[in-house]
Length: 191
Image (cartoon, rainbow, N blue to C red; front, side):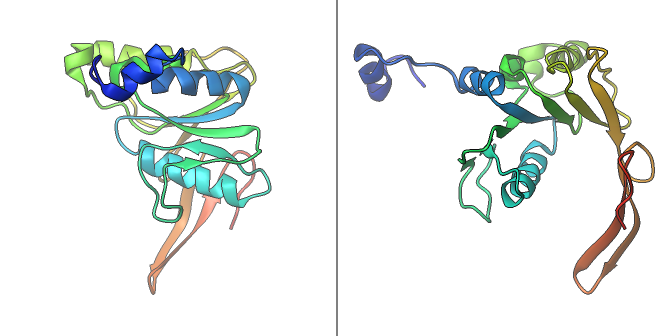
């Protein structure tokens, strides 16, 4: 938003506290239980699926997503739940504002090199993001990521991918437009 934008000038001249979206989301993760989804690819899809599952369950959730979902027609879900699902954007290091209780990292293929400069700096930014997870929280990583996590010792780390990792699908069947599978998990399998 340009500094001379009419609405921005109005809010600033009338004493409103104007902040970046990432700052606001960071505040929410410190006041609520944040499930944050980061990654070069898959953030919007994964965070939308997590928000839908939680919103339809007894847990419910609030959500700030990176795209408009077809089933809700919005990128924002509001409820009285103490949980919030947030798409954790790495652009401009925005996700460094967050303090997730749980996080998923879907991928870490170098992107935004105009901001980061090098692949190593990009991957280091993701490593730093993993240090921001709250004590007692959890991190789910896609297997095969080039970056390493650096969580506190009381943060549980899981991996996922097809046929390997702590979480994965097995016995996948696609038939008549339906997909069925068994979920393999350290918490127990669901057939």
